[in-house]
Length: 256
Image (cartoon, rainbow, N blue to C red):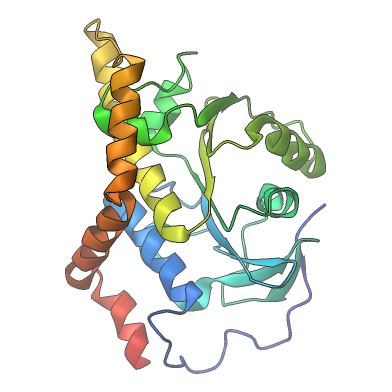
């Protein structure tokens, strides 16, 4: 199945409208910029999407660098990959697996795919993602491997990724990058950020013979981080930083 554009003519060509800070398109743009600032850019690849409540559709980003994303660049696409609403840049054509995941897992409201460096390097080692740094405990038992095959047709790719993911939160995509899913944009964004950070620590630790944390200690860290809303606190801190680093994003709140 391929992305088809049935959006009404002229969408995205009107003068910029004032947008609310709570608008999911604004939040997607903020998430992309946070990921960029923390080293998870993917050149013009990679995607961030959100389920549209009550519809068989999702909001998703186009081919562009993460730090240039504005709310107007976010498109609305159906589970059948029909473009319902489009901005000035069409959605990426490689988003079929977003539709597959949303259709298969009602618990998933956000999907993020990046080609971040540390995770991409880790996928070349055949080593599983481990708790070499305590933050990685947030994803204890939640990361599974996936071999990305460019010969797969899009429908097959989406179905196989759904099967490999099962009920987990992340795929390490061999020689490619990673996929992250979850219930909220804020949590999934921070889990992607944490996983990239921890993959870097893991690569460095393995290079000097380091070992992962014992399981019972990793479980204790996981409990503590979830109890203290670590992901939510990290989102808020990173969002505050955008106020200084990305004034062009916040100018959209004033229609500029």
